[in-house]
Length: 135
Image (cartoon, rainbow, N blue to C red; front, top):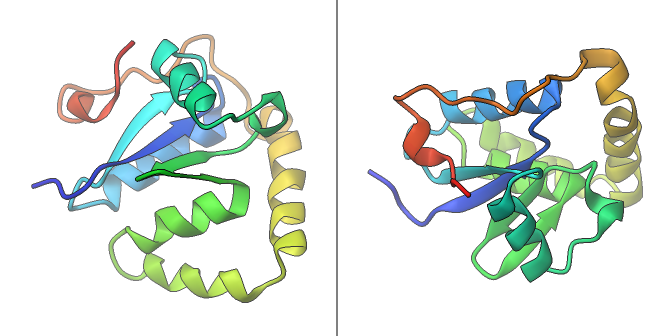
């Protein structure tokens, strides 16, 4: 049963991002999250609606209600809604944002080199297809 949906916008060609999406799916028993790739029309519409520029496209993006979260803020907000023990990551918010986002940005800049890319975006299985926003 779904409660209020939150939308995760992810890089559809990034292997690390695919793994992160699968992690969220596997640890989101209440199915709170929906997904759209950065490369999709729906993903681009959300980015435009919230004024997200090219600068943030190396970030996971969370749309929750009328708010848009980027980088470590998005990761923390996502973790808060996952199954136990992942909500405990909310306490990482006490680290200075400059440190959290610095670590996040360092990994994001190297994600293709470290984890590789895909020629096509994630193709969800029929069991989770309804959680992906189609163009």
